[in-house]
Image 1 (cartoon, rainbow, N blue to C red):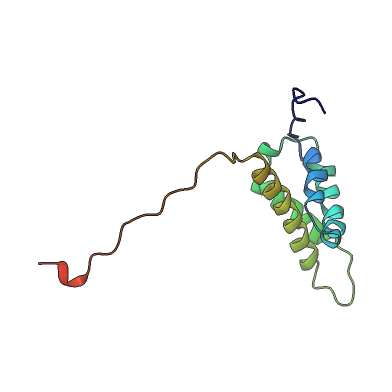
Image 2 (cartoon, rainbow, N blue to C red):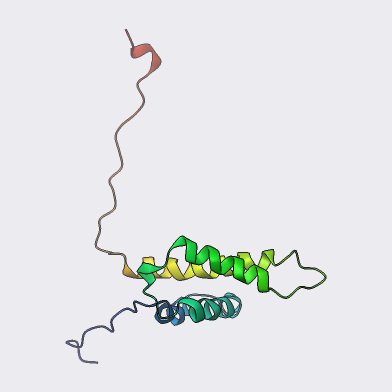
Length: 121
């Protein structure tokens, strides 16, 4: 590989982040999240990740809950809603961890301590 070749640019859209997100998951988690992330991409796939708001995620989760398959053991789609939120949360976590600057030094610990009660006049 040529060292002068720039690294592949990071995706900016929701759909672009999905493969990267699924690659960070275990096989079982990726299988579960893939369905919900594909549905999220159908609704917001071409949107910039930075433009997704909490209302988009909330509306998506409610839509998932409303359209969840009803089974005898289901609780009105609550689990489907929770899985959908977890999948989208993982998408944002991967994006934040990937784009954060690793060169930022950690904060130094504080030397501050509480003033003992007997120190007051």
